[in-house]
Length: 282
Image (cartoon, rainbow, N blue to C red):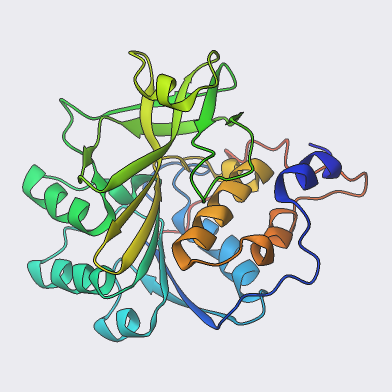
């Protein structure tokens, strides 16, 4: 995309500042696919320095699951990993964090946990979780399927009714009653979100928000491929979600949309499929 095209989506952001100090905790885990997919550590290494560059933001890191002390200090937990089989004590810590005002951004496989009894506990924390292989579905999608956005939701207010990505998503998830689906995937067609949400061929649960107790959660089942995180449109959606979760204006996050993916000709994004990335297990 050209820089002007991206700026039309980010809006102006020069001089924008957060209203308060924000402590972010980035949760990652061991990579579990071939390079270029589920690169949890590499994406952490991409985003943590960017987030640290925002004035008034500090970032801590956790591997597989935070400590109680890390939960106590964090304002926003960003999770991009396949969560381990959490203990009842860990679920209690997680639920306490959200109920008492903690904010969460959950990306892609972070919503998968089995069996269903554990999935229900995860859904209590983040709103949505994998319901089971016989019910929940996954699939890749390309530009033949648009991502339709609920633009009357504050997280996506002012964005186009639909955008194009090339990634993977899940749908038919277990959802808590307070979940609001704000992004779905469907073949190109009607731009009326509520009508698309009820269509037979829609892949729901691409993006959602959830409120429980005093907390806020922004979730997405997208984010499978490493190149997706180099897509300016995807970055906009993620940063808008972070801002919504924190109840902050998204403008201070918008410079990061361009960071490291803008070339000398003013084009923003990547043409590299990144499928030769080497995973670094630990």
